[in-house]
Length: 402
Image 1: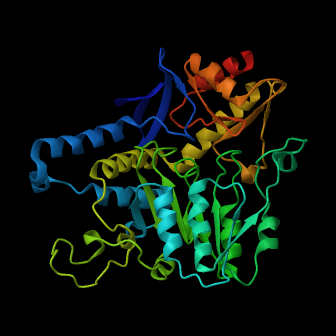
Image 2: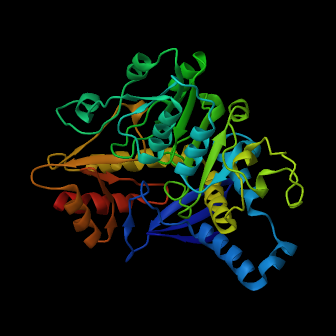
Image 3: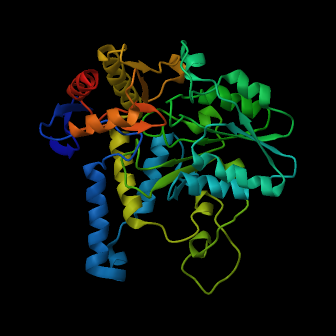
């Protein structure tokens, strides 16, 4: 048995009949962290992996490579396991914006081609496509359905959309559907497979920003007909800031033009005076230069922890914590956005009632050592598999008392 300190919890791994179980125990005196949709606490295994890489360079400089295990290979293996794919389809990127920008800029768009997206997308999944209007493409935006429309009631504000909103906007010039799997404000999740199947039938590429879902929800791109996805590593994956990963399907990847180039792009690798144009054709096509050894090692360790626990189990733990929170929430004070089951995510967004403001609620909870994420008028609660039921009880009671 090994004990792992993790934020407000101690994760106690036990091996019983060949099954790995995770028991989450309250660690008194530390804050309750419920902001996994923001910048998460890094898993201890990730911090240890990062420290090892830093120490190697600090002690040995270039000699580190003599007895070095390439962290990028481990990163790709763990990323592939998480996504149910093979390592040659996984690229290291520094953030979601970098991945989507590489894809948007390299996509073979023609004047008049259309990119379909949502009006309230996070900037990482808006600006890369907006720039393509300079090439004559057209960015078409699905208009918002308020959470009142999607959840019932009369609440306004950023919510999401319905499948028919996608259907009604698609034309014979639509080349790309670019959407966030989970909307960062409301927590609304669209149905990946339903939209993926729809796009495949029409020869449209579905490109997904998974920053708010990868590590919390099961995503199998090859089963869901996703052409590409990108995600940051410091939210639900609980890795370091400045890390991320990207998946590209082989056929889709072939059509993407190279827009960033450097030594690591080429098959000849360290034969630096050989300037033959011979780029990699697997996911290394997008890893144009020296990667972050520290970041890849740390994010690989975070993904390994998620893979060992199991993404389906993580998703189930998240659902149970969400249900517990909602069962204890005083809904006369806070209106939760409760979407249909197929549109639920790891984020619970609350609209404070009366004179309460989201930022004020966030500050009052922080003063009690409870970390949540106020954003766009919502109080976002984002529990994860490293949280305990005790965390949820304490946090809901504190929220109700404001």
